Image (cartoon, rainbow, N blue to C red; front, side, top):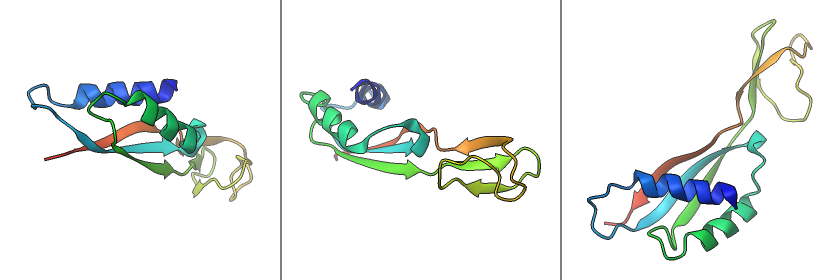
Length: 112
């Protein structure tokens, strides 16, 4: 619920104040696999919280961002598929997570 509230707050702040009666048709999000967001729950909460706002009825499009990592030893980069965070090249556990923690409003699409 808190994530949906924050996303709606961000969206409402991004809409230009001088637009008369704006209506959001689509809200595009980027959510990393490590962000621990349950899509169905987020959609449900979004639908409830967006009522009586310019986001009511907007389509929520969620792009899932994969977990990517780089080994600090051998600099190999790869997409992490399982829960093992070791380098597939040198088998070390000294990694840096490059993506997968994102939780952001990518864009809004407003009605004409």
